Length: 325
Length: 258
Image (cartoon, rainbow over all chains, first blue to last red; front, side, top):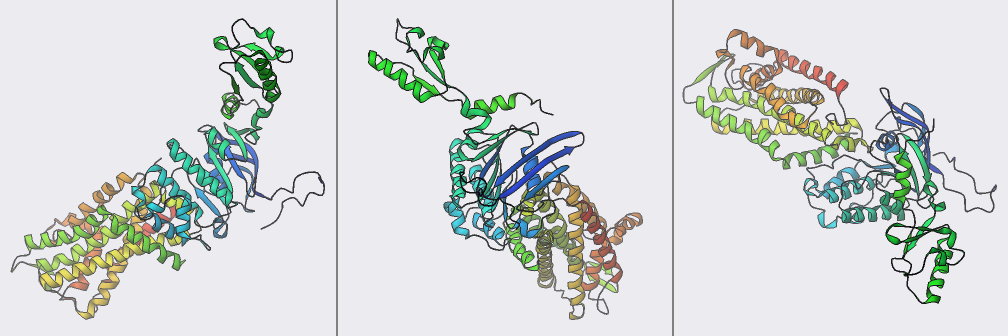
């Protein structure tokens, strides 16, 4: 493997330790079907040990991109390197280091969970222990059950186990929890969080905001074939700079003009007689508000502090078609 | 590659053994056909002409049903299972691993050939036990070679047809629509000698008839020499080669029907 990663931070002595090397690098990726551009020139980089989420609505080009990175589809244009190789031409040694959970695939229906894993273990040079992998995904009680008899959530966990059995460095998860009930999703998230402990690099696609927020170190939002925003779950789309809404009901007889001086300009009337403060420093403003209320001996019914959810950020990012050209 | 093919073979065979539809069409049906046809038409003194003389009808059915057994394993079952594996994403999932493509195909072909050889042996055993015919040691090699050439050729044809069927539900009807008429005009269910001339001529084009004739040549107690039906085997193999060409051009690892 070539080590194109940055050398230890000689140029930036004050910064955190050098970032790990990139595992996935995409530059100007384009995929055209006939006259339709499914992917319209995207750039991204995923570093070793990172959980990277590719977030976007259905049809945004997530699966197209991820299947190009997995080597299943040919790109129209652009440069990509996955584990230092071009997936379109990479061979068996490369596949040995990559695990995938495909969006629509079925494990071997005629085999039991343990047999599926034993079959796949035979494909790899240095597979993980089969029973340990079954236990990692929480299927120990189902090890002898036929894959075709598993529930949707259990089958997906078997998909996870098959992706892990070769002990890959990089794992692609394409919409791993679509169609799950909430408890099955939680269970799948725990498995992915467990992969982080193993130091794996994970490339995840999802259209669930909460999934990206819970799992990802970094998120790129894809809309109509373009990346419209990129950042950590906290900073995505300028979320960290957005105001927090502090809303409450004032006691009868008091109005917004009776608030302390520092809060008055932030106040606006809200729905249902609520008063809403749009705050950029919610902690300071909450203290001022509570000191004011407590010193006067009254409560503030309906007090609510609302930071913009990732979902609100995401919807604002994907609702309008970006005007970039 | 060979180690991986053998590894896959073990699991493909296990999956086959657990599949009830495959069990019925591939294992039970040929035995049923042999027993029913031989009981219906193979009473005492009923004979049919074969090259070199006459044999009892029940004896003549053995190579015919052996043909059916080989084709059921290598063509019918293979088309159904390969199409289903492709459409459900099983093949795509396997392609995301380091396993070589050739090993996946070789493992599946080996499964079909082993099932075909087993079925041929079972039918031979029934012929020997129930209808007291046994293969002369002289032609045993020819019989084994014919079974294997037939099995391999029909596997190639199976991969060709699987590449053309886009929907797993269509696989079984497609194979039966092709095979049933061919069985009737190829000496499997009824003797070719009772067919109208033109119908026998149609059957003569296709490999079913030639596999059946080659098996009969090796099985027929009147056969002199080693029992190799060279021309029939060549025609079967040529069909197999044509199937292989189509499969190589059209075979897909990814679902086609979505």
